[in-house]
Image (cartoon, rainbow, N blue to C red; front, side, top):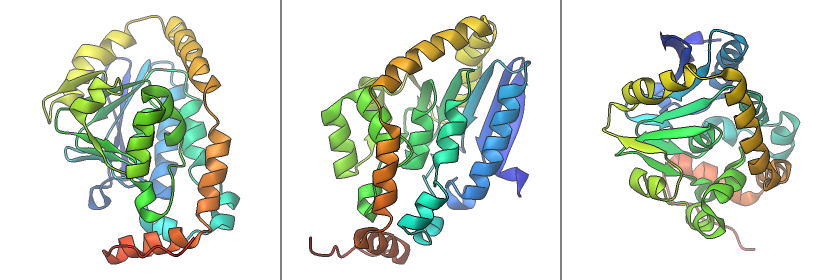
Length: 258
């Protein structure tokens, strides 16, 4: 296991930063990276000295999403059998401490879903957010259809997911996804100075209870298991096989007849 896939640091009292570090693959979520990330996340969650957890990526990519190479090797039975991405979802959901996404560059697919699992999203003004899974014959499978719809409403979610087109950071801020924009290259610095340290100084009990109450309201309008069942079903379709194959071959997919 390559521990360098996630760089953990404590740049301020009470604040743990977890930086995705797979630059050659634009921080794509391989199972190995997810395993290392969850180990670091669990360590931070259990550490009484850590009050806030910040998740970030590199200067050009927060996260490109799931690892398409790994997806290409999974059919519906495989995906359902290993409950693909379910460990990431349950691991993030179990954290009672505030989770902040500090986004530079692109947050796509599972990377955007990872940001949506956080409690606050701060972004560079040049960043983009998107769920392009339909373009490879799949759907979002880590809570994207549920959390995005709850956050921005049915029709904006339909636009983003059915068209598979990313939105700018400014648009993400205007629809309430992003709390605040910062100059590119300065997001983590501002998050640390303006927000994370402030949260770390507040009552951890009160923050945990407030987060639990808000998440309960959010969860009442979500059916993550239903989304995941459709996601795993999609792994067994011809369109998924063609879409992923076309992506890896850098060509347009040829969708089969209905």
